[in-house]
Image (cartoon, rainbow, N blue to C red):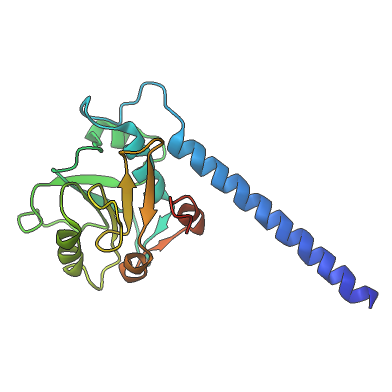
Amino acid sequence: MIQPLKVLRSRGRRNLRTHSQEKVLTSLLLLCLLLPEAKSAEASSPAADTTANRIVSGIISFTHWPGKTGLPRLCVFSSAKHIAFSADAVNMTPARSFNVTYITDWKSRPDVQCDAIYFGRETPRQQSAILATTAGKPTLSIAENNPECISGAVFCLLMNQTPPAFSVNLDSLSRSGVRVSPDVLLLSRKGY
């Protein structure tokens, strides 16, 4: 009887150690996402919200695209009002984690493969229609105009609240083909 007890204790220590590591990772992610930065070059215009830039950067950095080699490409709709990555800021970051392409219309986009899509004013219905054209290709999606987050994009930014947050649509995530760290899901407003 003593032997199984020892095994349980050692398993418990391992679980505690893993749980502690997860807490540290979650804390670090929160710090990266929510702490104000000293003067940032991320925003290309004064209207851009650096908080949204940090949230999006954090989500992308904790996302895995199966079979992807090289940096993922984030396609940002020009209707976005909370995010703006300047080419200089994306290229200057020491651990550059993605490339950015701005598009005005999905149908007229240049011949570029989008690994992640950032929607601005596009409605959840429009988001769903665009995402249907990416079926079979792992695609992360993030939206500004989707407060309910029950259809359309995987992640929905909630920038009109204090502090800014995001929600996750688990149905869209399961169809996206990408894998997102569970720690990011725990940080969502709904706590998934």
